[in-house]
Image (cartoon, rainbow, N blue to C red; front, side, top):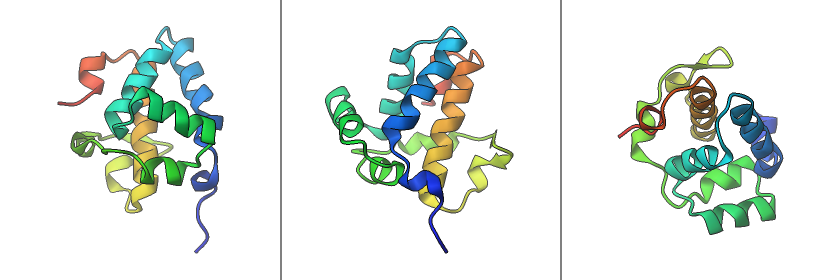
Length: 116
């Protein structure tokens, strides 16, 4: 079976869309970056290196320094699919990030978004 197109899409090409979605709802780029750091363990320098390298989504998540173990607490629907029911690990990581950005754009507090 062929890989989903999102796996080979550059994270750097989608990142501005995450930021725009947040900013449109009065949130900040710093909050988007905080969510990404919480989920993946990337520090700012390594995150910026991944953006500059134009790493694809699959590589971005495969090279993440420390995927947050609390991400398993992320529940809900993204694009009509329950994130907790997604079987393919990389797709689940992508949808976890989508869900967190959705929660940010909907006005949820950072304390609630960044599960303990």
